[in-house]
Amino acid sequence: MIELLGFIHYLITLYSYVVIASVIMSWLLGFGVVNAQNPFVRSLYQGLNAVTEPLLRPIRNAMPNFGSIDLSPIILLLGCFFVQSVVLPNIAKLF
Image: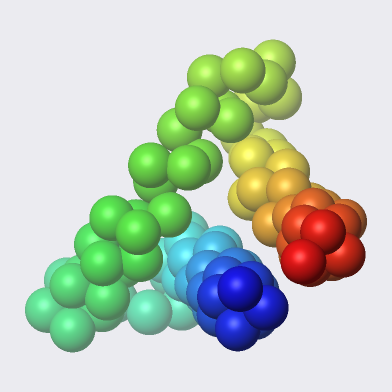
């Protein structure tokens, strides 16, 4: 069971990196640093959005509108860190 919790911890860490990569990619596209017409860039951005959007969309719907500032990735990362640092160790103590 401890190995399974370690694997879940690893997956949450990996997902946190994907969320950070998605945020950085959206900044690069938004500021025009990378060309959105490039097929590799477009497919990478679509892939990152496909992985992160299912968890970000409910957070965006629950939060008030802050205009052009999107704080949902921060909330998602805080949730991931909470699960890693509080929930998983307490589950591990039960076993």
